[in-house]
Length: 240
Image (cartoon, rainbow, N blue to C red; front, side):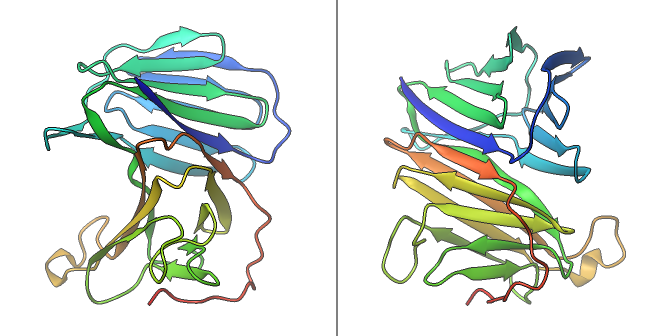
């Protein structure tokens, strides 16, 4: 079995741990962070300092036989000290661990798994001046929630012309920022943009939408999120 690790690191001084099951909602909590696993397998991180919710979404497994498994029903979560874990029918196990200054999100895959989207359309953003992704493509670009056409763009590691130049990516939402970092070059950043549709005009939740995925393959095993200092007046470069 292979082990992939996605760590959520927040630059805060954290306090005492606690774990609270609430119906189909399991939580790890300390004085600054709360992490929830919902019944549909999605993971939510609440930053108590900025009062911001970050949604990581439900993970998705791409199998070697070309089938896909989207985690949609978690009926049992195991608790051990500061760790929550759950398993899928194929034997893949996901684990959430709350550390003093981080949250580790890891997965031990079964032999049939070819790729893990540990973040699958996660960190969603709606249109807004202070809502965007930061990707270290070339000198660095900022990806706003705008555009007439929907698209999907993958940023592989260190690829000439189309990849990321540093193993990191960031999201900014309403002035709160979160930074992803990893070590293994078999990690890709996947950005999905859905343009606004005239048919959806006026509907609740309508409008353009941006989501991010983290694809882990082969030996990919480490990624981390940080809450960096945020400067609203930072220079902006728009994705092209």
